[in-house]
Image 1: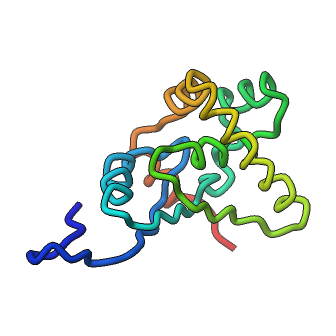
Image 2: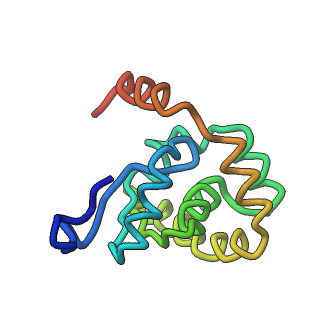
Image 3: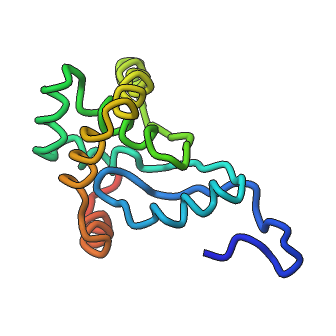
Length: 139
C-alpha cells in the first residue's frame, strides 16, 4: 500500500478498512499505516454478524466467560495497529455488550496465545469472505 507521495508527505491521516476475525488480509497494510502514524478505523468488525456464529469464537468466548461479540471486537482492539472499531451496534443492549470488548482486548494482549488461537482458528480465505459477503441479503 502506498501511503506517501514522492516528497514523503502522507496522502491521508487515517485509513478505514474492513478487518475482523474472518477477514485478516489487510493486516500487513494496517501495520504499515500505523507505523506511518495513521489513525486506523475498522469497519465490519463483526463481519455483518457472521463472525458471531463461528464455532471457534463461540468456544473461546465460553472459555473466557464473555459474549462472542465482546471477543470478536476484542480481537480487533488487541491488534498491534491499535485501531478504532466501528461496532455497528443498533440497540442499547448491543452497544453495552460491545463495550465489554475493551476489557477483553486487554486480557487478549496479556494472554497472546488466546488471541492467536481465535485469529488462526477463524480466518477465511479473503476471496471466499468477499464472495460470501456479496451474497448477503441487505435491508
